[in-house]
Amino acid sequence: MVCRLLWSEALTHDRRIAIVGLGYVGLPVAVSFARAGANVIGFDINKTRIDELERGIDRTGEVEEGDVSHASLIYSCDPKLLKQADFFIVSVPTPIDAARRPDLRALLGASKTVGEALKPGDIVVYESTVYPGATEDECVPALEKASSLVGGKDFTVGYSPERINPGDKEHRFESIVKVVSGQDPKTLEIVSKVYGSVVTAGIYEAPTIKTAEAAKVIENTQRDLNIALVNELSLIFDRLDIDTHDVLAAAATKWNFLKFTPGLVGGHCIGVDPYYLTHKSEQVGYHPQVILSGRRVNDDMGSWIARQCVRMLMKNGTGDNPVVTVLGLTFKEDVPDLRNSRVVDILSELQRFGIKTQIHDPRVDAAEAREEYGVDIVALDDLDPADAVILAVPHREFKDAGWALIKDLLMQKTGVVLDLKNALERASTPQGIDLWRL
Image (cartoon, rainbow, N blue to C red; front, top):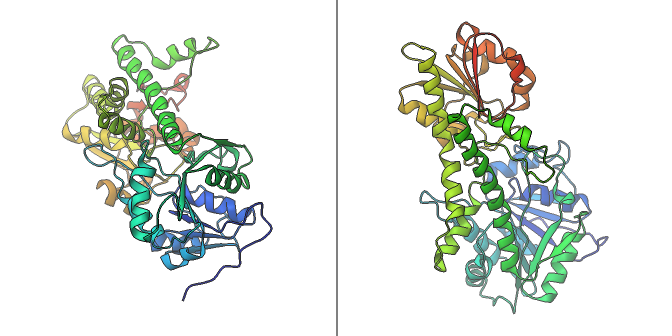
C-alpha cells in the first residue's frame, strides 16, 4: 500500500519534492527541504539504506545525528510513491568505467524510474555530474521513453550541479551558492524558487543547462590540475632532496600564491569528473593535453609512494619478509567513503614487490572494503609489528594519537614512516624513525 503525503502549504513554492538517490548528495538535500517545512519523498533503490534511514542512521555521516528523521520526510524504495511528486531531484552516482569513460547506467536507470512517475507539468532537475549536453541528449530521451510524454512540452528539465564536500561541516548544502539552470525561462524561475527556499547562500542562474553542466566539471578539473602540479613538484623535489612542504610554506608567503598540497586524488569527484569533460571533448574532435596529463600524474602517485617505501626499507637494511602497515583506506580523512580510493594503488604496488601489507581504518565498514577492493581491515590490536607505517589517510583518531600510535605499530619502535598528508609533527620525530613526507 502506498502512503499518501499531506503536502505543506507554508512554503514559498507549491512544488512537491522527491529526491532520487540518497547518498552523500541526495540525503543532505532531502533533509534540508524537510527541515524547511517541505514534505519530501526520499527515494533510493537500496533497501538496506532505506531501512537504516528510517531508523535515523546515516552511515555517510553527512547529516547530523538526530536530523535524519523528520515528520515531513518519508524514505522509500517503492517507485509508486514518486507519482505523488511533481518536482524531482536526481542525485545518483556518475562514475567512470574501467576504460575511464562516463558510466551513465545509474543516471539512466534513475531517469527511467522517474519517467514512469512523470505527469504533465512535472520538472526533473539533475544534480549528478555529467558532461555538457548529457541532460538534454541522454536523460530527456530516457524520460520521454519511460513516460510517453514529450520533453519541453509535457514536462521540463533543469540542471543544478551538486557541491557537497564529504566531511566538510562548514560548507553545507544550504551555505553554498547554488547554480541552477532550466530548459526554458519558466522552468528556471521555478527551479530558482524551489532551491531558494532552502539555500541561504544565494542562487546563481546559469544561462543554459550546458553552461551549468560545464561549470561543474571544470570546478573539479581545475582542482585536479592544481594538485597534479604540486604532485609533480613533489616528484622533482624528492630527487633534489628538498622537502616539498618546506618549499610550499616559503612560496605561500607571496600574496597570490595558491596553496595546494600533494596527495592521493581519489573520491567520486576530483579523480573522476575530468574524464567526463575529456570524453565530450574528444567527441567533438579535440584531444585534451593538459587535463589528461594532470590525470596521469595524479593516478600514478600511489605506485610511486609504494616504491619510495620499498627503497627506504632497502636503505634501512630491512630483512626478508618486511611488513608494512597502512593507516587509512577511505579517499579522504574523517569520512567512511571508499569510492575511488587511491590508497589501493599503494597496496597493490607493495604486494607486487612481495611485501606483506595490513591495513587499519576505524571509519570503514569491513564488509564493504572486502567487497569493493578485496581488502581485509585489521583491528588495531590485531596488527603485527611493522617495519614501515604509511599514514595514508589522517583520520582524527590517527592525528590525536600522533607519534605514540606510530611508535607502537613499529617493530622495536623504530623503522620507516611515510606521512602522506603532513599530519605528523616533524620536529617531534622519535629517534630511530626514518620519516618521509610526500
